[in-house]
Each structure stands twice: as C-alpha cells, then as structure tokens.
Image 1 (cartoon, rainbow, N blue to C red):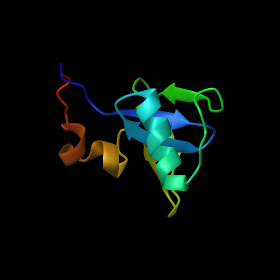
Image 2 (cartoon, rainbow, N blue to C red; image 1 turned 60 degrees about the vertical axis):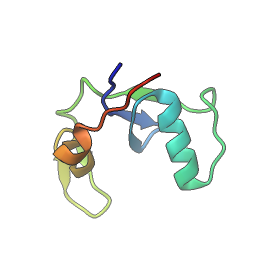
Image 3 (spheres, rainbow, N blue to C red; image 1 turned 120 degrees about the horizontal axis):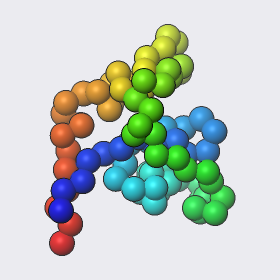
Length: 83
C-alpha cells in the first residue's frame, strides 16, 4: 500500500507533513524536544484545506498548497511501502 504525505496542524500553530497524526506528533516532539501525547494535542488533517493562507515565519504569506515543503514535487511524491 502506498501513502502520500499530508499536512497536519498540530496544536494551534504548527503544520507538519506526515503520513499519520501519530507521525506528525512524533516529528514535532522530536523537533521541539517535547513529549506531548495524542491526548495533549489537537491534530487536524489539512489535506482538504490546501487553499488556506499561511503566514510564514520569515514574512509573507502562501497558501498551504504553495508552501515549499508540500508544493515541492520532490516531497509530494514521496511514498512508502507498508509491509
């Protein structure tokens, strides 16, 4: 089975590209050095909101679909085989 990366909003401000809610939380925890659990955080799949405007930390705005990590073909075509 092949999966695609999806954008997940973790908490109020962070958006993470991952294959599942669990992976999104793990990635954010590793990046921030936190130990939040699924019960601690509200995690929302944003796959159907690619036209949502995102305010970039470095200034300016893009839609979620335009954000470089999700828009870049190098990343959007990443798939994984589940065994």
